[in-house]
Amino acid sequence: MFGSRRKIIVRGERVHLLAPNRDTAADFVAFTTANKDFHQPWVFPATDVPGYRHYLERLDSTGAHGFLVARNEDDALAGVINLNDVVLGGQRSASLGYYGTRATARRGYMTEGLALVLDQAFGSLGLHRIEANVQPANAASLALIAGLGFRREGFSPAFLQIDGVWCDHERWAILENEWKQRASTFSGADAVTRARRPLSRVV
Image (cartoon, rainbow, N blue to C red; front, side, top):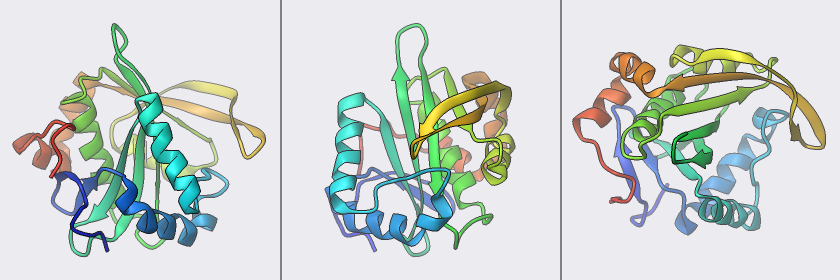
């Protein structure tokens, strides 16, 4: 699917992380269009090229980090993961956002992809805390982050406006030391630990 100009950040046992760029526009749009009904009402990613370009501009202008999760076996896109609201200094934190595909749900691709991203976040990015805010009815998403070792910290009523509606969210988080203790249970994280690469070095 992806051409020779793809930028691989790191490769795990079953998936690899790609840096989103102009060369991945068609694949991103095909992925979000095919999974529109699966993503909504939880998330509303871009489903056309202008929207995807706006997504890239947002990453550049806000200092956020985007990752495309692709399967090693065929390079097919299995998900998108974003580290938003990055704060450095004494806080060193970010907010996690992610969405996968209906066809590959519950097959472990996003679990490994998120493990790879967490290793990057707590490794080369030097972050201390990652927060994930999830709507209470999104059982699959809650199970995913709980399985990765996130802790439930609280409940935030009317936390985020999505498609014009203020939605309640559960607040979950994981700290650097907590992830290091948990990471050994994930093959994807092990792969990154064995061959860690800073985000500024892509191939």
